[in-house]
Structure formats: structure tokens, C-alpha cells
Amino acid sequence: MSRFRVAVHIVPRRGILDPQGKAVSEALQSLGFQGVGDVHVGRHVVLDLETANAESARGAAGEMCRKLLANPVIEDFEIASVSAL
Image (cartoon, rainbow, N blue to C red; front, side, top):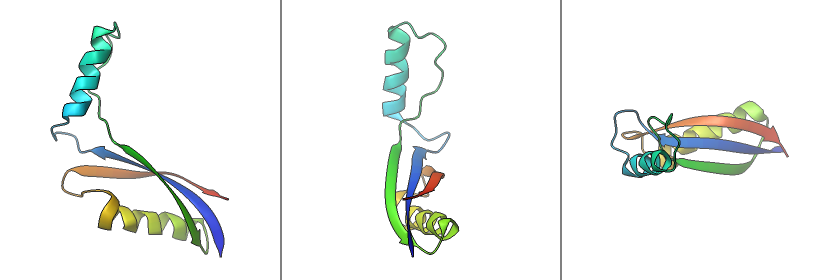
């Protein structure tokens, strides 16, 4: 078994109301950042896993997201990286 660190990004799905993202977008524009469009505020989750290989770490993290970490009705997730520890 090896140890892996898996980084996951979880964000609201496109078309889902994101009041926090809207507030951040408006605040950035009021600070002079005029090129800002839609902003989506989500979560960044880092998992340390002990698995056989990087692919099984990626699969386990995906399963964790589908079962608990992300709400599949309103959120999308992306496995951003898998690195050996």
C-alpha cells in the first residue's frame, strides 16, 4: 500500500443559484475588477489516502465525492490532482 494526497474541487453546477458567488462577483466589480463575469464559490477538499496505486486513489476519491462530499443534484466535482506522499 502507498499513500497519496488527492485534491478535489467541488463547485455549484452551472445554472444553479450561487448567492455567495454573486456577492463575490459584485464585490470584485466594485473594487474595479471590471472583467469579472460569473463567479462560482465552492470547496477545495484534500484527502490523504492509503491505496495500492494512484488510479485507485483517484477512484476512491471519486466514489467519496459521489456518496458524501458533493451533492450530485447541485454540485459538480473534479479530481484536481493525485500525488504520492
